[in-house]
Image (cartoon, rainbow, N blue to C red; front, side, top):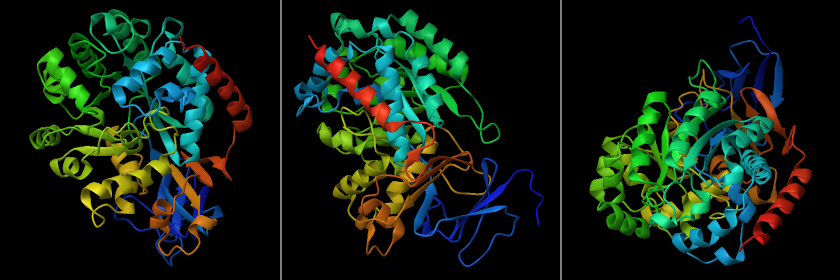
Length: 459
């Protein structure tokens, strides 16, 4: 028996365990401190000492999911009438008139609400891409850091940017962009203030990446300088790319190159980059992306809602790319539910690749191990000895699961949407579907008032 330096918990007798790898843990998982220390095979008991037991009968245990692309502020503008039934560019053009009125109070509330939605749907790591900086919101990342701390979850916040306004041929209005000097200086500031480097040994909870919004909202100079700054600070790079054919046409017109060629010219084609959407690539471009080990955040619901297209996930993976999952903004998805996104991915990807290759395990793998690979994290996204104890427990005691023969497949095809329990670094942060520190009713009420305020300010 092993002497314990901290209490050890056995998550015992689950209905099933999805490990996101080839390991088997049919009779549960042993947790000590913030780490997994043993996988208990079916019919076995732990070999190591344990101090307490959590009965997990009727539940599926899986790694906490990792959301790799979102826009938290957009929870304030779900289903806005003027933006409905539009493709990306007209959709953006209308909503920028709303988003230019964003302030710190709104972003704080939106970040908490989006983060809580993600956590309740099984996420232990939440990612956001914030790029709208009207004058009243110059310290947006600081506001988000405060909100994330209250959620007590892992987060990767990207310091987004837009510098190419309508007066210079870009898509966004000049009221939401910043100068390149301001963007680069603030990018360095937030890295210095908040980025926690490290790996499994240091258990980083908050990391920063740099994320110019898209080729149609920043200059080539800013793309190039951001890549240099990211390399200097050893942080990741993120942007939207190849989401629509309109984007391809814009890049050809402004830069004389397709989006991927433009990305390479800017020094972004490497394994420190992950891209949102990645739909409209040629076979040759997919090969180049794979050779460079670029990551792709697959966002199926948004891509369907805006009629943008279908991400070629299997082709990208087979070429050598890392592929994960993202819910995208709550105005191009209208929810922030990661479990629902997994199901959408299964259904959408089967239209492209058929039923045999797109399984529940495949799409759950995108949301866990795949998403971790996008963020260059090797300590989360799997259930394995030594990994962080970031776990989602789904209860199958509901009408929608009655009669299900395969518990893991049931999570996806029967439509799991809310965790029973969520563990982060060995501690329960959600139990019986409720966050330990957030008053959900109060948060929802305040958020709804702010949403009404920003939507009514359109002019």
